[in-house]
Image 1 (cartoon, one colour):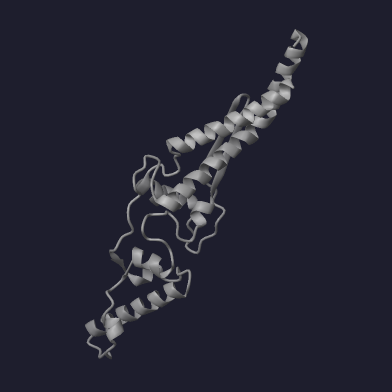
Image 2 (spheres, one colour; image 1 turned 180 degrees about the vertical axis):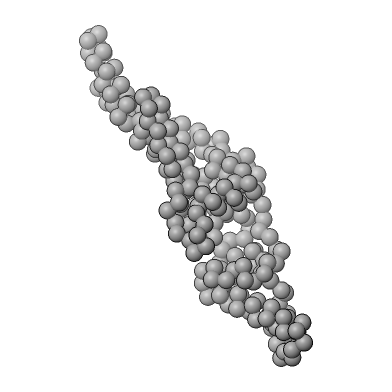
Length: 211
């Protein structure tokens, strides 16, 4: 290749990379987020391979789950538990209550593990997901393009409206972050896949520039 052609190819490469890298960087970030979310939902482990834990068996007051069921099973469990608690209140107040063996066999309150099972959600490992809204609301939060500096930030986008008014950012900052740390961090195999994807994208641009 002549020096002039080479110089032209280098200039073309510089232009193409400048144009393409913000989009490529965003794709890398989104691919990474998707891999991390899949790993958490399917295996319940963090980037270090450690388990995120187990769902609690400790009962919570039934009212905590009011209007939060996802199906008839969740509603049925809520109704049974609240009836049980109402009967206990009546007993304590000295009121007569009828016998109901099914209700008498129920413990007070609902554990989060039982709540998930009633709503057909997995309980063998922590998935950081119940309705799926939080995971779906994690995506490209911010993009910075300043010369050769290109940064794509993945995090809560706060696009989901919740009945309690909580944003995804609040859920992550107040609960998920303190409890599970940087749960969005990719592990080593995921990082290697992202590097390979980035490298392949750059090689395509180089070939385009020097063909």
